[in-house]
Image 1 (cartoon, rainbow over the protein chains, first blue to last red):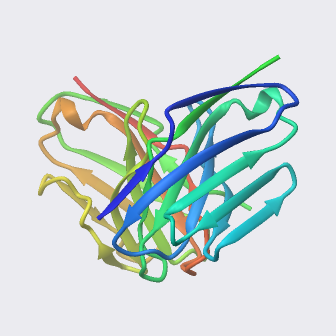
Image 2 (image 1 turned 135 degrees about the vertical axis):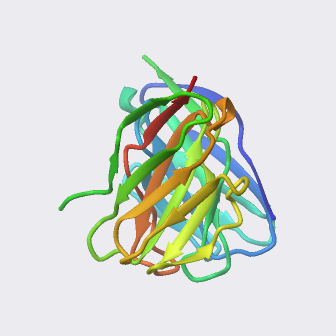
Length: 111
Length: 114
């Protein structure tokens, strides 16, 4: 099975940088996804990592270490609209198989 | 283009009743997923279809839950003899079926069992 751990809550200041960590223990691995979910809305895709290293996409970057079962999402130049839940999800080792989600990290950005 | 569409957006039903939740995926997406989400938790996997067939139904909690996708497009999640514990937001997602393709979620159906 899959076990995914993320901090429950984080708080940061507008304009700052925040790093949200995710650790996982899985029986199979075909990539790790990060999603953003605003309250009352559906999750939306942010980033995907399948190889070790850093993927950068504008203000958002995501890092993966497969040997350590570890990923992080880095958000730079925080804006108030970044207040949301951030979900880490690991895809099964079948081609488009199920993704198992963590319980999400609720980020609050303060002025 | 149109995203994933789920109907109804809200459903209130009495304990013991039968409900159907509908999902219309993004056109051309071969993979379709059902998840449910309770407050403060991440989405919990229920079932995933590749085309018309259920490729993995290991997340269905018991035999009261069943899902179909007869023509490889629209899917219906069916819950029999609903229980108060079934109350949650039921999310549908679709993807293009590639290993690196993300899930595109609908806005969900909020099911309340009274």
